[in-house]
Amino acid sequence: MKNFRKELCFNTQTRRAYINITDQVQEAIDESGIKEGLCLVNAMHISASVYINDDEGGLLHDYDKWLEKLAPHEPVNQYRHNDTGEDNADAHLKRQIMGREVVVAITKGKLDFGPWEQIFYGEFDGKRKKRVLIKIIGE
Amino acid sequence: MKNFRKELCFNTQTRRAYINITDQVQEAIDESGIKEGLCLVNAMHISASVYINDDEGGLLHDYDKWLEKLAPHEPVNQYRHNDTGEDNADAHLKRQIMGREVVVAITKGKLDFGPWEQIFYGEFDGKRKKRVLIKIIGE
Amino acid sequence: MKNFRKELCFNTQTRRAYINITDQVQEAIDESGIKEGLCLVNAMHISASVYINDDEGGLLHDYDKWLEKLAPHEPVNQYRHNDTGEDNADAHLKRQIMGREVVVAITKGKLDFGPWEQIFYGEFDGKRKKRVLIKIIGE
Image 1 (tube, chains in turn green, red, cyan):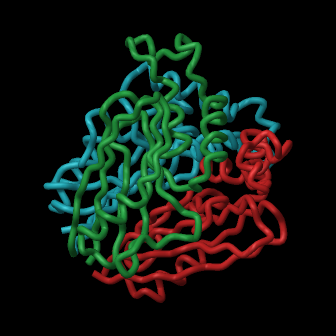
Image 2 (cartoon, helix red, strand yellow):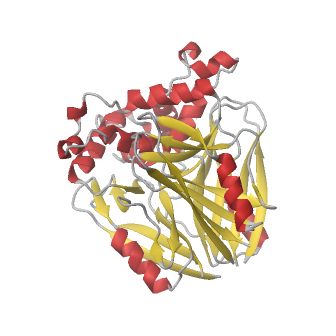
Image 3 (tube, each protein chain N blue to C red):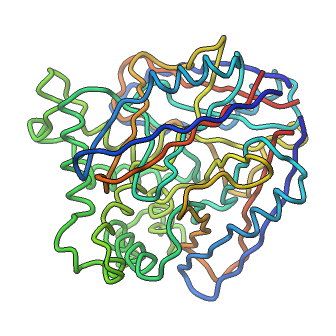
């Protein structure tokens, strides 16, 4: 069994952002030399997500509006977490809707994906350094 | 390390559907010959889910009503994704609540499950061909 | 390839509870002797979650209030699942928001975590015996 580890780094210019990282994950698989196995991709920070969905601008707009409706940023004093001096409680909630991680199959050295699957980094409390972990096992 | 891959195919008669696929996943594990390992089961399409919960008719009704409340199908023009000519933006949202994939343990050749765990395919934009991927690694 | 299996047991005094199990998962990894691999941690019951987020009291309060808003416990007769004699339909919904499982990387024998990542057992229908499964593969 082989294993491989890599980190991706982000520092978004906006509080919320949705970044397609599919190519970077495939590059990590290429570097690993693993042809058959599983690839874990997870946010290392608890106010961000890794998820799989469509890379379509209208949908990214819809996600952003919908998450803000389900877990609004303001008023920040509605959240007890923000009593600690943070203003990012909503980001911890949004991240639970979108998820921490994805596990994807590797077959013949490639991401084993359906026609529209794309891996996204979802940032909900940006303008700071954040990391994503890629861990691959297989052979 | 062994690995095994299989696809399941669906074409539901209704827009939304909840289909118990537990037996089909166990059959794939049997075919693989893998006794100890991990089994990934994921929707290959981005308007569908694979999730684990109870196979109880009342609960399936409750999920359907609840998802429609959190991410309503209509009016379809509330979503910018639907400006592309699609009418399935709500399906992309519902799928994030229910999740893309499950990873399940295999122990002594069987799904290592609690008493009520059942694997479901959740369809939110049906009446078309869709696939689920099963990828197993272990030995 | 090595594999390792362990169960954790819970019986909370309250209907809902959020319990940090990070140390118990690390202990299981230590017992397994696995240095590089993947660790699955999942609720074995369908009205509970395993998730990763911050161990901060204000946030746990915010999660509890938010989940109750998105999937209220009462009135219990709003859910068809409760026609079976149960009163826990809301717990099955809350668990989908927070998720069934996490898959975490093991690197050099340790949970490969960002600075604030902590593993939680989220109970939404407690006061009864429940279990969590830890399954580790690697070498």
